[in-house]
Length: 463
Image 1 (cartoon, rainbow, N blue to C red):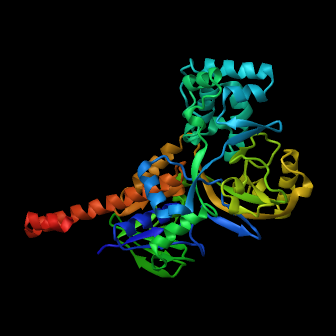
Image 2: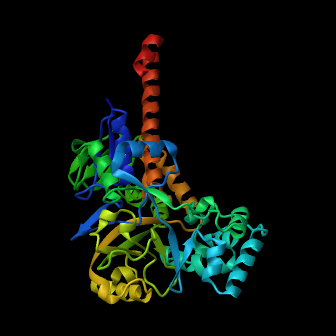
């Protein structure tokens, strides 16, 4: 019986293990940390719980949604909470609506925003960057107010250097029809404004814990960092754990950042591959959770802060996802601060970073200084792949090289270098396991044909 080895015990690695277990295929997950979940964890600090990001499970794939709901049972619930963009101490709906825009901008700015939005729809210019995409999607006024600054803070690059793909699917549903519908019928909610999602009780990490439990402790190796990956004859032969233990493999599934994976290969890849992988960049996060002595700040699921004067990009109040994330009389607010290795934020002392973030938070008017009980800081490495312009060309070169390894699969946001969500991770895992099952069935078919196996017996074996 063949075995699948999975590198990384985050959402993508656990998903691969989950579907391997469902298919009754032997597997083993290797996780460098002492817990599973990767960047989808729930932290506990005193009487507060908070996630390693503004996570939520979207009902975007019916098959995967059914799988998750079946697994979680009554431990997951549907939550409806809006998202907002902070603008001059006012909260503007995100995605943006005409009526809400008119209520929060000056009349002149509102008219300019609507005019630019409508006129942008009639321009058919080639979209080469996220800046081009945003201008055509929202027009110059809205883009400059809400998208350009935010994107540059998040990704650490100007928007003319970013791929249009960084938008993901968040802006895709706003068009002239929905815009005019909301403008003429403000009480009729457009499809893209639905703020409902699924969320596990007691934190998003509970979903990862449930999947890990299903996979089984006997199939998960913690404190197991991959230090070298050996290959020959167009196959991954084995991999090294913690500079000492060698494991042979039949199929290897990697959710490691693709740059880390390629640099771990032995023999080393050609120089041009190593040069190309250096062009891929990742963005990391520092999370600062402020414990607040009040029952609630507002009802927002997520708040975005495009203004460059704030060091953070977005904030979320965990209790608005699940009430048990803090005591009834208290709440918390988690602020995300993106950074790159060795940049200004990365080099800041934790106390200095906390003081700066606290100062910026008080400027928003969301809380008073006397509301803050305490703070705690967490670091989330490799939070996002940075999708620069022409990153597809770099990835195409790397994938052409990696396709020589017939028993290798890449998965996850960082492994595949794609902008994706939890439901995508689950889908990636299912597709990988399905493909391995098909490969093995075809291999058995060929072997049986060479041995002259009776076709009826072969069909029974496959079933």
